[in-house]
Image 1 (cartoon, rainbow, N blue to C red):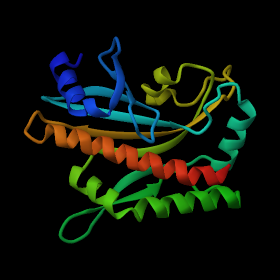
Image 2 (image 1 turned 120 degrees about the vertical axis):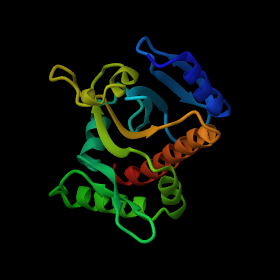
Image 3 (image 1 turned 60 degrees about the vertical axis):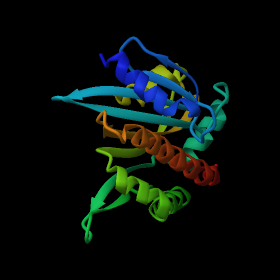
Length: 215
């Protein structure tokens, strides 16, 4: 389990941006931001040899009412099976980050157009891409997540649980942004933690703006 000392250091680094937070039994954290374009943030910790990797998962709900099944289905049909991942392109003098679609384009023209527009918009955000290039995350992915009528906070902590079980009806549709980064307890720890928050917030705002057109 991740130590309370490291938990406290992370929370202190983000305390002015956090409305409330809780520590789960497995040592992970659930955070509700004060003012951000994502709704909730799960922070999961994993030990890699002597280092600790942080996995930040921000969720943006496109359908807030759990009873709005028809709206959830309509939103999912409008956005399609979209997912993107960060790749690194060879460039001089340093590698350049670029988002690419990790799912095949959909045959539906409207959905395919939305995916292309989103991919282009992600890669055209100069300030955002500069933050990502400086941070150099181990992984960064964006996935459209259909959820059943289970507790979203519990599901979003387990990336393998994104698909609802067969006996669960679709009630929610959310974007999930997953960013992994090894953070060392150095002088720039707080700055990097806040940069991660900013990147997730910037991406969330863009996703909300563009995916709204797919409804």
